[in-house]
Image 1 (cartoon, rainbow, N blue to C red):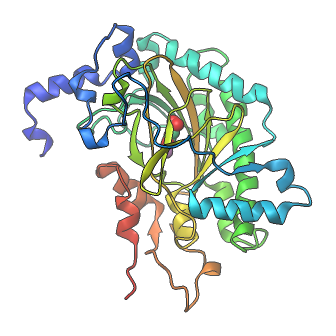
Image 2: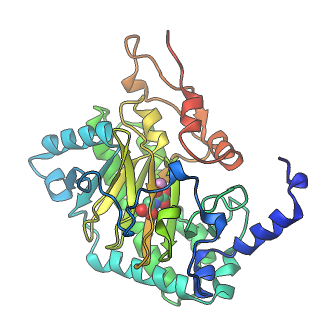
Length: 367
Ligand code: OGA
Ligand code: NI
């Protein structure tokens, strides 16, 4: 339906929810509005007692210890990384070098940001996808038919001096704490790129892609999931894959992230102070399909607010995203069409950004 055909009553209904979930909850709420109710097959499975049905135990993702990665066991750790990226598309890292204070301060200051009056937060609301700072709600609030129980703050973060002046100036320590966080996450990402390249048997010192990634884009996405009166009817985030190379996710101690593993949604146990790292679409392509960009989604709950901070790292906008020449040969031909990043972004901003449409559309089907 073209925008001109949307009935006025729908426009009005949509406008009501554009201010976000935090705003909705601050005004008192005992039921989930229809706008947030997902079709039954997409909903999480809860029992009648409002407890999440757990078909299995929560998934224990492979754990990568950075200290070990930098020690004599490096080759063993690299194999664990490779297996995790092939099997789950996800792993967790501990002893990653970021001081506990840096990650705790980031979560705390983000919490404070979302507790600011709506008028303060809404200064950053814009539909311009290339704005250095963007505050918003749901997944794609201009397109989503059903809304997600999530508000977000997206910050472009690299090169930092270009973007920092645009970041929120309130709370007063937001910029300095978030800047330290972004810088240290970038360093962690660069260490991970080195390890990932090595795990793919690609020499990272003499490698154009590694250099490009160093100069590539970084976006810090702060997700805020307020408690929800009927969590069994909605989702914090719909099933999606991340478009970049790697995502480094910091969560507070409240669970909510689920990944699709063997056709089942499994919950990831948060390990305090750790990072969850996942393969994005760019890395799936770069590895020629060996490493998997896996669908994940977020559940909400009725009692605890949840904050997560995702740092998405991608190739520069001008790069062509394609399988590494080091992983393809005549026996292992390229499985993906070359795609420039701008086309990528264009695609995800115009389509329902759900499922793995984009990656599927880039696949070459060899006979
Ligand atoms: C994301 C994401 C998961 C979470 O920001 O892309 O998947 O737990 N976040 O908030
Ligand atoms: Ni994601």
